[in-house]
Amino acid sequence: MSSIPIKSQADIEGMRLAGRLGSEVLDYITPFVKAGVTTGELDRLCHEYMVNVQGTIPAPLNYCPPGYTPYPKAICTSVNDVICHGIPGDKVLKSGDSVNLDITVIKDGYHGDNSRMFLIGEPSIQARRLSEVTYECMWLGIAKVKPGARLGDIGFAIQQHAEKHGYTVVREFCGHGIGKGFHEEPQILHYGRPGTGDVMEPGMIFTIEPMINAGRREIREMNDGWTIKTKDRSLSAQWEHTVLVTETGYEVLTLSAGSPPPPAFILAAQTATA
Ligand code: MF3
Ligand code: CO
Ligand code: CO
Image 1 (cartoon, rainbow, N blue to C red):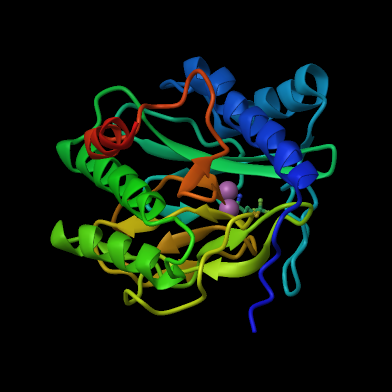
Image 2 (cartoon, protein in one colour):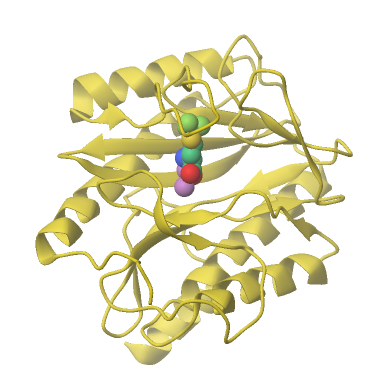
């Protein structure tokens, strides 16, 4: 018996708006993500945009899951070997850095959760490749979303692609159901076996947010209570979308004018079925 919420039509409308607004924060901040800026300044700009321009609430601020201290900022900024939950501060971005900005807004009680990678100045070929492959991993997972498919199909697709490139999948953090709650059922593992796990049904909404390491998959936790890094100090990348299961497949809710285009294999599949 699965306890995965099925969203009402009103919930879905609310999640469409929250999702687009979450993506528009990333559009807004993009021109500021350059060498010389601090992660704290990016947080300040996003926070102001959410509250003053969008009328949204930054979900991370004071977010306090069991066993955690309240998260102190509006966004997460995860640089280089930081896997996730990097806390914005005095860190100055420099050419060659890669940074994930993870934005979750609340609008009318609904959460829109998404993240993108940004490559600063002249990134290494390895940093570029890791970000690209991680983006493909996210979309390969998204492409598995349809009624009747199983959650393990998503994780399997992601893990296969990452490992094919010699990369590893972080196990300790996963995608999640989302709606009026930030983190709801189910957990979306980014590794697994096809044909296993809960069956997807129309009206489910969850995130797909693979964290992929260039080196080993093990993590270490920093003393700030939030920041997660790779144990071996290798680079890590992450991309995230919030996705609705529709009658025929999926709808990505966290899209906006500035969203990077899906990979060619997704566009080809869309043309084939249009
Ligand atoms: N946005 C993250 C996610 O994708 C969660 C961040 S929790 C925070 O699930 F408190 F660090 F913001
Ligand atoms: Co998420
Ligand atoms: Co997120």
